[in-house]
Length: 492
Image (cartoon, rainbow, N blue to C red; front, side):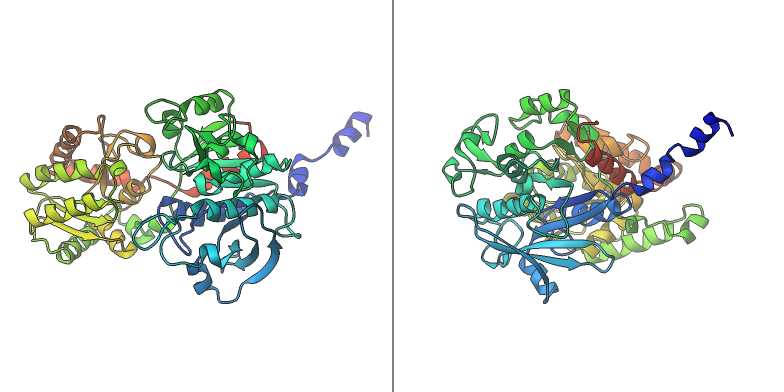
């Protein structure tokens, strides 16, 4: 055998080397998780993405030990105790193993988390007055994991932070001289976690960090600003939103820093996915070549009865949303007159700003039998509405990603949406839904009229439904991009 041949056979095998490489350890830090408690889309992401990451790395979750967690797990394994800092109280770290093997760490601090209400506020939707301490405790616990003291048997190689409640962790890493890379995902830039700067000492933040090159934002102490400044890499939940937030219109006062991160290659968009169980096309239905008309009609009849609507051959529109200004609910209320005038019906579910909740109630009272509303949210009811409706209204003024349009498409309901953020990335205008350019009632009304024209053509409406239902929004591709980002924080 020649020398060249021997060197060829003795050369390292790249596949074997890849197999031998240590599994990367990632701590996914979140303020909500739909397994236990959810206030928005972050809860669904926090339940799905760490599980999808399991094929690429050892991903574990860290979240507060809310009352809902304690009620579901009467016995939680104690892993470590963490010290106090400033006015941040000491806490314990508990370890839970889900039925599918996912490990969830919880910050056990009853005086901060064992309360009724949502992750962020009381049962009347008012913010907890000590939210700065509550989420500084979560962020500091994440940094303690990186320091190797939260779980002595498992130290993460990366922290994956999410929105303002955990963004301060990247600051604690920097202030304590820890070199663990951190990735911060911006789910909604409008929520910035701003507090009185006199709270610096209480939160164990060094005074010199209160600077434009630190945690200061227009004279306030901002958790999100800390994350944007100190994190190794930033992501948003769609490519278009990543571009939008680097502009003055959508940047919420942070566009200058975000432009800088874009130029550095440290800001990118990775589209969210949805749970595979939302694929309503069972193998049996696929074998029948997209024949969901039977279940579409059955769900429509059920939902009309549930909301007190009359029988109708016209299209059924739905709003399944938080009732807040961002979502353009006021535009939808005004455009509902066009829907009713043209023989359509509308069902609405959601909770949010009192004035918009009342606007929805008033709309239903003006159009009994044509508009039905429920103030609140029930997941099973929402799923039935996706399956029943012909069109879903999403006139959001801005939308980082959006999940409802994906659920709607999988259910054969065509979204009617403002051409922004993740809506622009997931809807093909005139093919899998309808997009309109200006966030105005006139813009929405024009799109609704286009939807009526499509509905009047059986061939076209079913062609669009088939195209929408065939869309793929798996978490697999998103998880792979995140796994790449963990290994190479500046690679985008």
